[in-house]
Image (cartoon, rainbow, N blue to C red; front, side, top):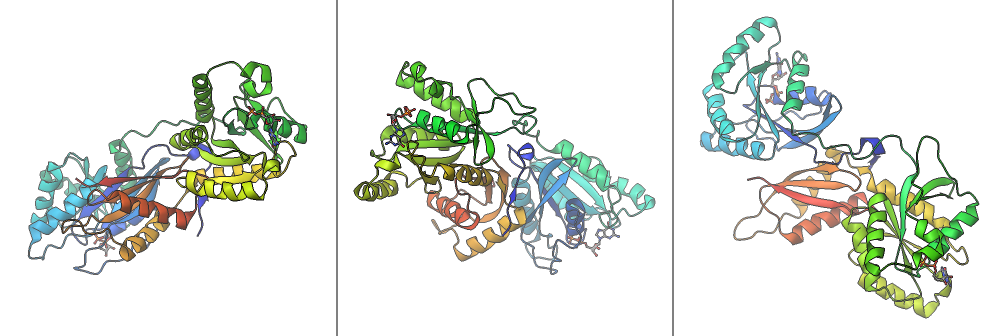
Length: 447
Ligand code: GDP
Ligand code: GDP
């Protein structure tokens, strides 16, 4: 299994749009999908009469990422032909942002095509009419007759030879929803870390320890500006930006302020950071305030490392107690990375940097769509959604909508039971890991 860590600059923050390719058998849908994803023979030939499952592929054009779904061909000889067409068209259209309706321009519009167009036009989704097999200019001119389908301008394309496919993809990008704004600015500086925890857990002690151990609190990093309230610290041979540590550097200044103010400050630090180190006092029970701070980190979708500080005070009895507490109090975040440190003695402080790196790697992991769906197909086959009132929603496919943290969208035929959704989430982690990072899974049922 190979996972790709996405460079910070390329992180996608919004959902990846879906383009569905629909049409009769043999009009060239698979060939077109291969052309769009820039691979040959990537799509398996389908057996005539057998409807292919919807298979999603990653695609990219002019720097924009989207998912292409190759839908099965409609079977015009089926008895309940109209119903079959309707079902296929509706399923494909409902999950898509843009529909490519493929017609064979050497054949022209058939009655099956016209039946399908009725369905497509009723949907609010943008439909682009692809006049495929326009291998030469003559056929291209003839394809103008497809205006009669009432879907607007036909795009003459030769999926086989590539003719016209660039223009088609330009039109696809135009029809896609607005791309998400790029939230991460410019050059990549040091990774941003929030050092947080309730009062007296040892935050300023740890900051001092890190600064002293490494004896290299640097003031600037080439090409970046660092907020004066932040600290640049070398940990494990790498420079990290500890955000909003001004209050920790000056003990005097931090005694003031209410708990409300402290919590605002913590929220601000989390917001500014990519990964949070939440310090807990290992010599004391995990408190409600600790829980609140952990909750703030996961709510904000940041990577998380829990540092059990004051480990020098932990004896065998306390360690036994703590294990039970962890099972009970941290059961909702079993994926959080944990290190047992002592800011006082310096114990295991060197474990911090590897944990931060692992958490950030997980946070930025992108699972290739093919790999994701191979796994998902096997999972839902082995354990389908339980039947409720004679019906069970099916999971059709999944895409990863974004990173930082990883976000997944399950495309389904209906709403999923909360329990089943949790099951899929749990299995997703078992398969792909994501240690140290929250993972979001949402469901997009077709309507
Ligand atoms: P699908 O059933 O709609 O997925 O159609 P396929 O992609 O399997 O294509 C059906 C047949 O049409 C295959 O023999 C393809 O090689 C052929 N074909 C697809 N696109 C073109 C094209 O642009 N020009 C020509 N001449 N043949 C094509
Ligand atoms: P902050 O409020 O989270 O910044 O906590 P401080 O760093 O001010 O530490 C609070 C108290 O805990 C101080 O008396 C520290 O000396 C003590 N302390 C911090 N880290 C450790 C540790 O690892 N072991 C022990 N025994 N005491 C610690």
